[in-house]
Length: 312
Image (tube, rainbow, N blue to C red):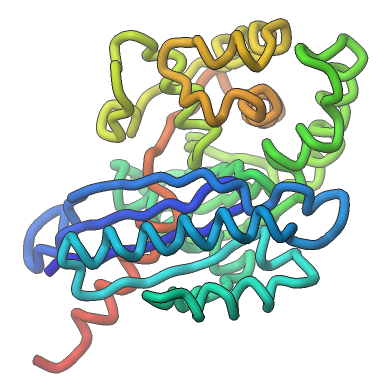
């Protein structure tokens, strides 16, 4: 049975199509991943509202993702929305518009607790975590979460309102950034992440910032994005520091030419990479693990749980 999960976030609209294979390990096999980058949260930090143009782009992206799922033969399609819709004063307006699309996308807004649980589960299912401590950092366009668990049990999590899009819009005015802007960015990040739980055990990084830095590190070795090459990749904290310094001296146009980087992330990757670096430094770790999974994988795992419990 083919299943699909759509994840509508601040920067991207992601969709995973997977085949459920009962009785096999792993029980979910990736069939296809699709990424749209409509930047729904553009302008949200300054206004508290989703902008009409951004909503239009995101609705078109949702329509395309839903059509792809149907064309692939997905028998169950679930769709969730996270920080940008959760935080926006006019989030309900966007949800109504999504439901009214020609193919109808019934988005379910999930809270921070559920987002943390799904992110943590995606890591537990995909990486060989032991009974020791594992911490998961999920850097989005509008927020950053840190989740701490033991084995398969989640113990603590917290979200702070910093993300690659939000900090870029708030603090970066020049291209490339000035020294003062760099210092202001690092200061803002350090102040925000001080509110997060203390990371314990191995640190696993999810979402577009982490996978983009991994893609930069792989460079020409990965001519086109390959989630299987990225999943489980080790990034040294010193390497992260080097990328942040390099990105801070490059214009957006120059970043677009970097092997491995999706040009659509060129304007926000600097702020995102800085968040990831500072979290690794705060954790006192020499390296972290990148995961290509995330909320969409956790959502499908929970869907499979419910399907498995249905009477046959």
